Length: 286
Image (cartoon, rainbow, N blue to C red; front, side, top):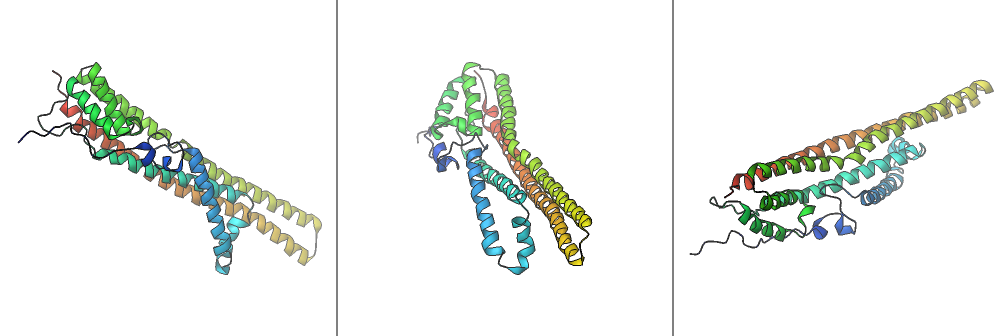
């Protein structure tokens, strides 16, 4: 029985234009797990429209839900802006989760033969690179493939185990920074949404105080005073409701953001273990 070729053609293919979530909709996919901001903004706008359509046509006709629908529909423009940013953030997190799932699939490939007697050196690195680049249409779109590709490409030119380890370590730091940069907009939302709530609070209090001052100056009868106090109460409602909506939205975003960061951190750890198991452990220069 002939020995099996360790460099046999891989069965599965990773096509970025077909597999990436954003590419499927005709948008340029962000690097690794970074989302396309235009795509996520459009998706966030659609979700915002759907949300307010549900509030208006399903929730508002229910008398028991009127206090809650009024929080979104009767408090000026602040709740609309808050929900838009919230839905945009949810879209970013959703797209990132889909892109991370695609990146994780690469952990299942084995471009380096698993035979115990296989040695990774300058000669075999070329064969491994050919096999690796046959698995994907472009290895630079996949974090793990990109890291392995760069390490093996440098192995052909450098030829020192310590240098390859340094290259992998440097690439690991770059990958961590690349993934961390994908949270810049989300971190901005975590800051901006509470600010919107506080702006609503200031506007509401200003409106309430102004109405109360007008009531005192007018010196109207009991009926007029009651109507004026309703205006004051409306201003207070504007202030507190907008802040409540903003804080709840921020809390949800922060929890999901932390969860996603933990998943990406775990993925990076798995990539490091993969490189040690499939690259570093098989290096032997002759």
